[in-house]
Image 1: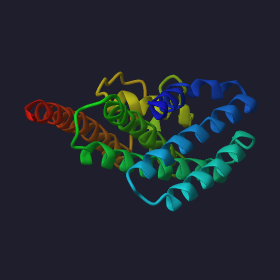
Image 2 (image 1 turned 30 degrees about the vertical axis):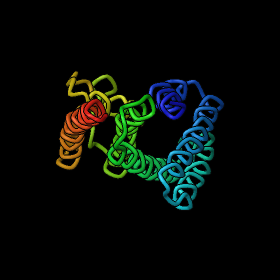
Image 3 (image 1 turned 180 degrees about the vertical axis):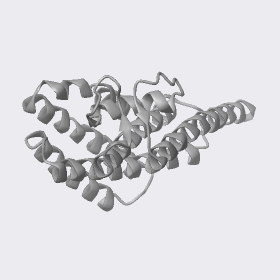
Length: 210
């Protein structure tokens, strides 16, 4: 549950980074909570925490550095790449927790399932940002014509895409950008379908046990 609270604060509290370096630094420090609670999840599943800690530490370094060097493209890419790798590792660990659990549905299991969905949105937002930086013009925001969308805008775009809302403010223009957007839509939809079936299955089998 604690990991879910931190994930919600991070993935939907990103607008505070628009208020300057100090707020960006505080936002990045909040990721320490995700690293800490993520390690607890990994340990509970009996997985090795060494690689997870390395990814978290690398991201922590680049995250703090980015807070004070937001206009540096190499630092931004390093921050986005490390956070994407960290989020992917965390999602895989949480998926093992969700799909290996055979007991009755509980708060922890539901929280882990929700965490995966929320963190997936952040992961794709980071990937979209990397694509836009390495291939400018991959995405376009009509509200800022002629400018590349910032990572904050692409995090928003990621959740809108995953939820299949299709507002249309930000548009993928290149083949790879469209392919990634399509993949996120399919992945998000399939995840919801599969995880709901999984939770219902566990709940039904638990009811049948004496």
